[in-house]
Each structure stands twice: as C-alpha cells, then as structure tokens.
Length: 364
Picture 1 (cartoon, rainbow, N blue to C red):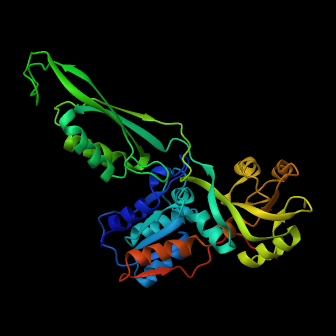
Picture 2: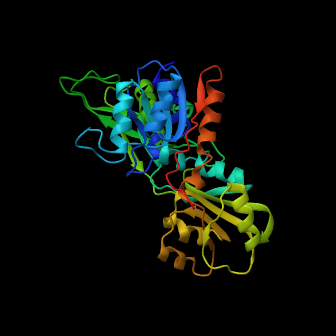
Picture 3: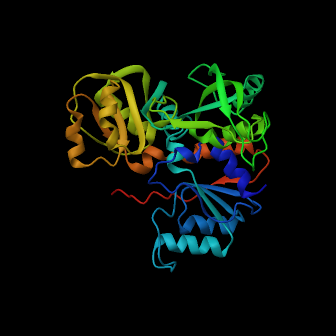
C-alpha cells in the first residue's frame, strides 16, 4: 500500500473539495507514491508525535489539524512547526491532515460528537454553499441514454433521497467543421443539422473530474458543447455542525453536569441559564462562534462549541444556552473516528492511535 491509497480512501470519506478556503488540509509532507509501513493517527502532528512515529516505524501520520497552516519563508528549527516538518522530512515520514474536510462531512467530527453525547435525529447546522453543480450538454439522440447512465454511475443525479435524476429535452443542433476538423457526424465545410438531446444533471462538487471524464468517453463529438454552473441550492448533507435531540429532556444544571461527565471535562464556560428544560442540542466541534445565530434559528436549547469570546455570550440573546467545552475537548473523539474508518478499510494493516495527548491547554 502506498500513501496515495490512504489519501484516496480518506478523500472519498471526507472530500478535500469541501475543506474551507482558509484551511491547509491534505498531504502536507511527503510523497504520495511512498510505500506505507504503518499509520499513526493523531490530533496534532507535533514533534513528539513524529518521534513516536519514528520509534514505532510508522511512516504515515494522519492528523486532524494541519501542522503547517500558513506559508513559511525559512525552514529552520526555530519553532514547533518547523521542527516537526524538518524531522518528518529527514525520516521520510508523510503527514496528511483531514481538518475542515472532516468537519464538513456528514459522517465526520460532529457526527462523532453527537454519538458520544447521545444526540439523535441529526441534521447539518451550517450547510456549506457552492457544493452542488449542474452540467448541461447536447448530444445526439441515440447517445443520450448511454450518457445519462454513465453519469449516474459516477454518483451524479442524486437529489436528497432520490437518484438517477435528470431533465432532458430535444432540439436541433447546427455546426460546420473547418479544415482541422474531423466530424463524427456530417462533413467538413458543410452545414450540418442534427437532432440532439439537451441533458441536464446535477452533481456534487467533488465528483466533477469523474463526471467530465464520463462525458468525454461517451460523447461522440470531436468538440463537446457543455456548460457547468454552481448552484446556490442549500446542501443539507455537507456543512459544519449538527443539531438533534436528546432521548430525554433535562434541566440546564443537570445538562451541564451531564455534558461534563460525557466529555470528561472538569468545568465548562456557559452563558446565563434560562431556567428551562433542554432537549434540542446543537454542536460544532472546534471554534464555532460564527454559528450562534444558526443554532438559535434551528431552535436549539443548547449550543455546544468552543473558543467563545467575551462578547459572543451576549449573542445568546436569552434564546439559547451557549456552552464552551474547550477546543480540544470538542474534537477529542476525532482520532477514534479516523482509527475506526481506517482499520475497517485496511483491517490487516498496522494502524495505531498516538499515545501523545497533544492538547496544549492545561488547567490548574
């Protein structure tokens, strides 16, 4: 197995196309063609984790957070980022990060957090925009059905609970080839009229390469006329955070005790208690202050996230109980998720969870 095999699997599970623009998810260090001797899973690929990989003989580190987030101009061992990268390169260790690609996955960070807390009937809290595209193309009538079936086989044409969705209508196409042309239908320098089917089909952004490859394989024309547009439609299956329900409602103080026990934390920060029972819960692992209004709109009684600032608590507007459980604490089950999916995919391969607790925050 090579590094690319692992990357391809993780990219299918949580496509990098849906990572946030500011992020640096993906292969950060190493060559995707390198043979893998073992996979070490961690939250942060800091120097201590790289040392652990060297000691165990594992040459692929799969981390949640990217060790390299911003550009660097000098690669000298003068900070924790450079030290980790230099040692990884020196020992031929590859580093791959999932980060916001896994955040935006329906089966990612927030799904795992909901499972650990016991939240069911979940939905995406903050759907990601620009993830749905539409292909329009024009093809001879006799080739239209084959094209649609090929596109469906890539995963295109899925709308919610339905698949193999498309819309087609017939029309008249006209064209005339020049000296360099080699028309599949008609002749050079001759106006040609051809009955064509206009095929419209939607697909998710990460499928675009497969969709276009299928289009080129099936379409008989030398020059294929097609259009691609990005839709503004909301995608309820890709995005940040989730909301759902507890099996039983409970009081706010009871819930705060409950969440501390579930997440194994000694204390949490929270907004003013509203003196009501809670049942509908929103979560967003990592820094989630940007989604406070979405949690309120979703009707959440509680919004669990981290990195809330002083003025963020005022935004609760006496409508939701904001609970800051800590950044690492809100994402702590991500390693387990990555371990579970990788061992299921590669059951006979050396895969291990790091023994290093990379949480940089300590409490006294």
